[in-house]
Image (cartoon, rainbow, N blue to C red; front, side):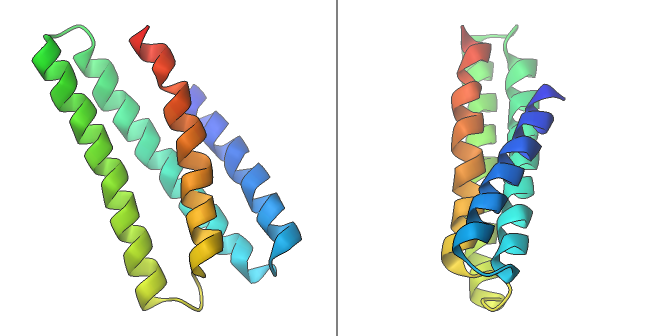
Length: 113
């Protein structure tokens, strides 16, 4: 649950920065994809944690599944921007997803130590 709190905090910060640069309508897209990135990261970490005490092959398989979840998020970004481009402007939406996901992925390194 610590990762979820960190992800929500990062989402708030990134959304506030987008609010300063773009119009307020872009903030919803940023926040939505920031929260999506947080949910994906929490699921990926849960997969990784369950593989830590198992064989190396299992650990790598679970890590790959988490990376696949993150790739699904990229696909959802593409669909949202293509289908609802007026609600999901590309740059603020990408900033919401990548701006939250990258710091969370870097924090994942503490699990492997």
